[in-house]
Image (tube, rainbow, N blue to C red; front, top):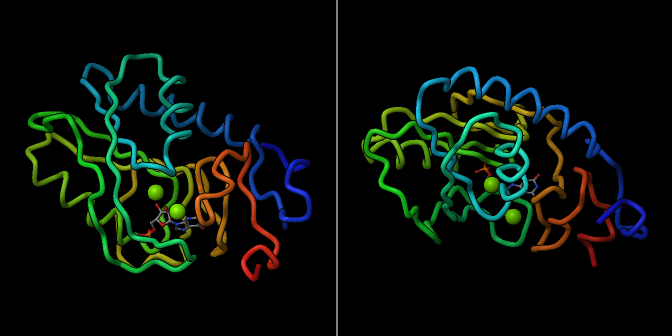
Length: 184
Ligand code: 5GP
Ligand code: MG
Ligand code: MG
């Protein structure tokens, strides 16, 4: 889905498809270098991180295992509740593994902070975080994030995996929605 397919629902394109691709190239190079000689397990956080995992992992020059976890901290609205629930747990045993959590966005940081603690307690050799987007102004808890795609303003964004009430995940870019979408 592209901007022209959104009618008047689109307010602004924040990050284009090309910008996302170039940044993922850079992050993949860093990850290749940092994990050279080590096994690597990418843990994608459903559903928002599906495109990040797909596009980042294919840019790696090495093989990486992939697993998925689903947690919930948002309802269908635009405010973080701070309450984290596991909706789908990992298949993989993390004992001795080098784990890279892949996220779509860090807002308050509450979800990732909880996830980091949870995965670290399972005996992993290392647990690091890669996120496509980060809202620095909104972070309520300090989380060490090793790989950040873009720092963005404190606005609600959609696209490239990110939804508003399950819609707009399949947009090719990251953008903001016109106010009438939330009001309608
Ligand atoms: P946090 O716990 O860091 O506040 O937010 C975690 C989750 O909230 C993210 O993984 C994402 O699913 C959702 N979220 C936070 N900010 C946004 C946003 O601007 N747009 C969308 N669509 N989801 C967001
Ligand atoms: Mg997420
Ligand atoms: Mg969501």
